Image 1 (cartoon, one colour):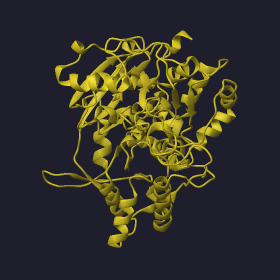
Image 2: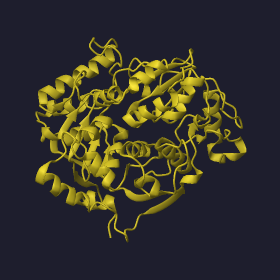
Image 3: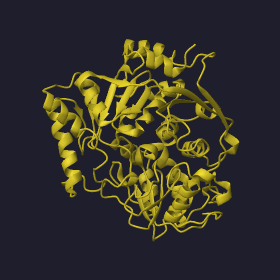
Image 4: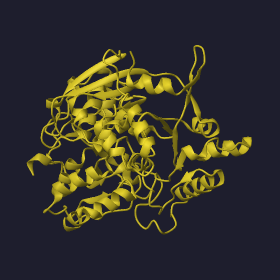
Length: 463
């Protein structure tokens, strides 16, 4: 019997090379300004058109500023990349949401919220966090620039079939524990390479009880443990989220789609290549202490000592602590911080801003903390204002910025300075990820909010 992954993958197989890759049909491709220029240039060189332009959507997000988007981009590299996407999208006639468009924002936020991403689809993008869209019950994964060109030209891609893994998280989450904490816990347990070669289906009561925003966060971080992608079987939460979205089917088409989507479950007798189970009771608010997302711990825990680290990982462990300026065995509670970032394709949705606002309401931002609060899209920004969240944030001393990838990565103006310590709700804490010499602690929105108020790492459950 078949897994959810098998059902979607098999329905999209065009052909299979003997002892080789699968030619997989792609329902939707997203393109941003960083990984698409060479792909479009390749089409131009070969005299090819985009095969199915209606199934391609281009959005600039990595390089765009989050203030004064009505003015020209100052950085010449960023400006050139955004202008190249603008020219390519218009020349080849694909869907395009430029800076200032009401549907501009981070691609992995815009896709689900507009209904461009739907259950049962295959989706790709030249971006590793394409796995986000798997939360809707889809096969979504990142591809390289040469593969972007392949999809533009043929609406297909050659891929080796990955193995399957199911990760179940059972029980009920405790107070203050968010989907981001669940994902960081799983990555720490699995390690950053523990799911390499697998497509992961998340299951169990914790996943079933999660909102779509939370599921999108969990699937977003699948790549950080080496997985090819992550996915969650669609259910009533999924269907309620999708219904009424701009590009979602309507009328008879909705009824037909819904009937199909309800079949997208792993069969009771389906066999996975690997099964792993975790308990919700073991998860508390999380923070990272090192330079990859797997180097994390519960917020009240202490950094491991060297003898607690596997011998093969001790060199990288010591290198990471030296970069971060931390000591093995120490707690990070009370550690002074400089920057806070709320946003990215991981935590830039309305639920994240609600959680942040709930924590800071009636309090004041620490004067010396720089806080960048960046909605994942203009739709999120509008909802923040409609719900009065912007007023709560403003009263607490915070400023709302304009949508974009922002401080997730050092490709735009929002860079953390050398040596400064940031608490970030994004997805990666690599050396220099948020700026040359910047130091990053990954966390969920409540932990970031508490740090912004107190000026240091603190358990948000205590305030």
